[in-house]
Amino acid sequence: MARIVMLALDGLRPDMVSPDATPHLHALAAEGVRFANARSVFPSETRVATPSLITGCRPGGHGMVANTLYDAAAAPERLLRTKLVEDVLAMAQGRESPLLRPSLGERLAAAGRSFALVSAGTAGAARLLHPAAERLGLFRWNVEEEEGAAAAAMRARFGPTPPHAVPNIPRLRHAARVLLEHVLAELRPDVTLVWLSEPDVSFHWGGLGCAHAQGALREADRIVGQVVAWRDAQPDAAEIAILVLSDHGHVTGRGKLSLRAELNRAGFRAGTGMGEGTDIVVAPAAAPGLWLRDPALAPQLAEWLAAQPWCGPLLARDPAILPAGAALPLALLGSGHARSADLVVTFAGSEEDDEWGLPGHAPFDAPDVPEGGGMHGGLHRAELATVLVMQGGALRRGAVAQAPCDLTDIAPTVLHLLGVAAEGVEGRALREAWDAAADSPPAAEAIALPRGFVLEAMRSPGGRLYPSGLRRG
Image (tube, rainbow, N blue to C red; front, side, top):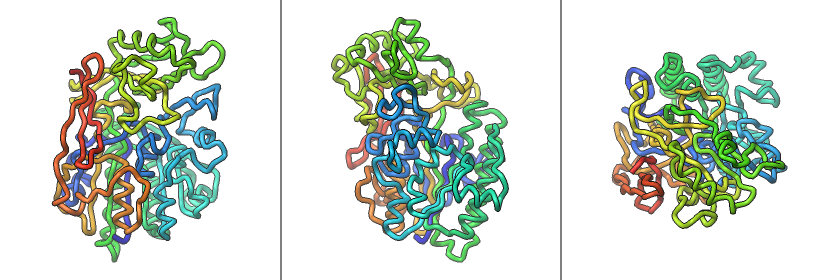
């Protein structure tokens, strides 16, 4: 394989790929290999998923454990929001990046290969996807960044970046120009990653089936078609692979609440930083994290949470702070890290169809997402299921791979296709993409959780666990 172009459609559910909604992606999947059992990581949030994609490791390995988190060493007085570069750098504490594993760009550079990023997402996510760009002299451009050589050069050539909008179509089109006219046409990197912020933005703000979300999805799909057309026009087209992925799915948010407010009403002292008068720091999310001043508070807190109808099972960084069997260890999901919350709350969702006729809805805690908006971050099967399609070169044609995989398996696969070593990654090269004999259906597991919940999962032949969905028993 000579070159690889990766396109990420943020938040796309695989059951929303169809000839009508996404004709270009649907055709690409039919021509290449689609991974039917592709999954996100937990928590299924973008700035947890992006480091998992780019390092080939789950959160417990790379250390980015939530979109919004509390890190007493970096900012004891407040929550950190990783969509902001300044908060990502605060977590790094003087280092180049807060990530504890090398990125795909670093691994490629060490082998004499090049990597470029074009991002229509947040600046913080772009920094996590390509943290060493400046040091390595490689290209990283993001629609939100205004400083730096790449931002200045692209502004001089293509004009200012359009303002953020819902749907975010103007920014997608601007990013596509940077990708097609500069990166692919002139830089010609060995690996290119383009991150499209849609349909995620529109799902959040309008709901999964609203008109502007469908328009945003069509625009993202149109860019997939443009990349395919560019590839097919190249003299070395037979040696250029295209990978299309999503970082997580979406579930319709139904039953919006503020966990911090609920805790305070119940008599706990909850806040957004560990200041005087605060015993619990709460990071709002589809799977909120709770950091405790004193772990001895955990049993009382867990007992109260268990009585709430919206609360699902608890996960714990150290389950020993609770009675035996009261919480699932984060480490089982590959998500336990020193930065992880003491407790992570899940919400009790449903498999019933939402108002758009799509299966799944769940309560959520997100101040800026309206009731009925799309949400992600938890363990609902609609949040964990992702898109993964590969096409081109020696990759299989017209195939559906059944083997389980997640975001951490993508970087090892890219490195393998380019003949670059991948030591130290947790994921594996997806041989099913080019070798039908390597493919096999997963072994299904059902893990019993407290209060009658069940975590459905897949187990690979190598023994790795891939969570598939949380349900009521």
